[in-house]
Image (cartoon, rainbow, N blue to C red; front, side, top):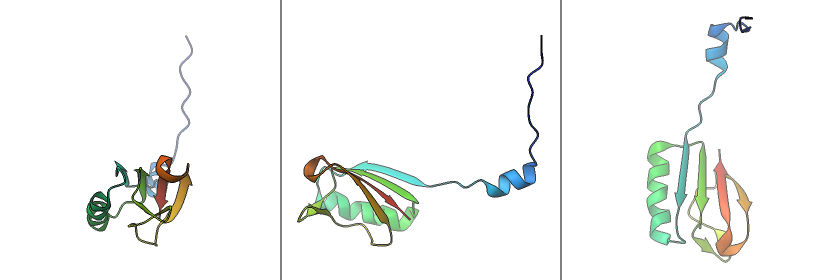
Length: 86
């Protein structure tokens, strides 16, 4: 029986190049107060990615999340989901 072949990696280099992303996921159910509470969590946790389903919207645009995040949107109106990325 053949032994499995593993490729050696320089562990010091490998550990330095690994990035860990902090993520949040929430369904806001179009709630303004839930969006306000999410903002508090964002300030405290400082996530890299935020996944939001059913965001609170004003004039068909999601509101309540700081502009420092880039927004990626799937769907339209009440059926939309958003990913916020630093």
